[in-house]
Amino acid sequence: MAEKIDDISIEYRDPATNQTLVQQLAAVPLTRGAWTTIMFKYRERTSPEADFGAIKYRVGRYRKRNGQFQQQSKFNISSVDQAKLVVEILNQWIAEDQDAPASEPA
Image 1 (spheres, rainbow, N blue to C red):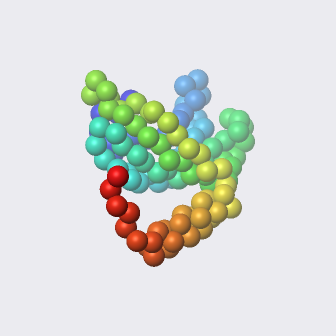
Image 2 (image 1 turned 90 degrees about the horizontal axis):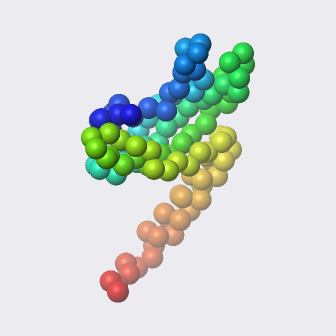
């Protein structure tokens, strides 16, 4: 577990062989604070003998409790094609929302 946001990682090594099974390629905090959201770029092995697979992405949500960040939830984007679709839909929604009038508070 990590005490600081910048120390949160999804890199994982097999304890028996010390071989990296999940290799973190990049991490970008989207929000900081007691509740933190981080986007990761990573790849993983399906078995210790296998090569690393395709690049994947993850958005993880972490909560600081008792001085340590603990994962609360995660969303994995399993392929570049899926990531492109998420980006395309978000860009479309953002464009629509920029043209929409601001809503009145309830």
